[in-house]
Amino acid sequence: MPVIKISDASFHSVPVFPLSGVSLFPQMSLPLHVFEPRYVELLEFALAHERLIAIADVIEGMELPPLPPILGAGVIVGVQKLPEGRFNVMLHGLTRLRLLEERPRARAFRQAQAEILLDDEEVERSLVAVDLEVRELVQALSERHPKEREGLLALLDNAPTPQVLSEVVPARLFQTREGRREAFSTLRASGRLALCVEELGRMLLEGGGLGEGH
Image (cartoon, rainbow, N blue to C red; front, side, top):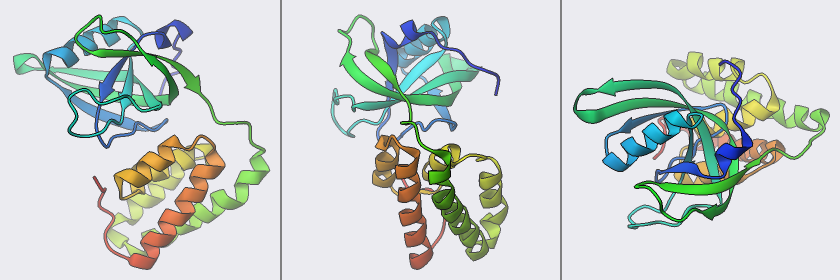
């Protein structure tokens, strides 16, 4: 990925794409298929304003669900125009955002004022032990699931730091929406890694497949 710089002003009225059960973790990719007119308008706005979109994991089945307190901020890294005004879009997760307020509706899509949320400062040594434990659990899963072994080991190779590991494991391996939501809402890498230990341990005890839960 190239270095991506987003101005602070972009978070004053960031366009929001509501998706029930979806959390955009930092460092992860999210494909979108855009076809509704309001979200085509959102896409055009984002492309004209630093390519930034916030993903909101909202309550399913509500006409206008409230926005959650924490959003995932992603930047558009690819757009494919399709027939009939449809688009395939690829987002790259940048950071978490704290919702400050939803902006009064001025366009067909929703917008929010938000601020960047960063991990609290943590001493690297304090993460080493739990980082190693998570890696050992993922390796144990790879031995339990030979067909998935290559992908699981690649996941570890692509997570060189505890912080990155704490993002990719919940995004890729957690089996339930609730588990992913809890990990996404946990702001410290140490807390996310602790959830990884708990969830991976449960997966090893229960067995079963590694298909993504929804």
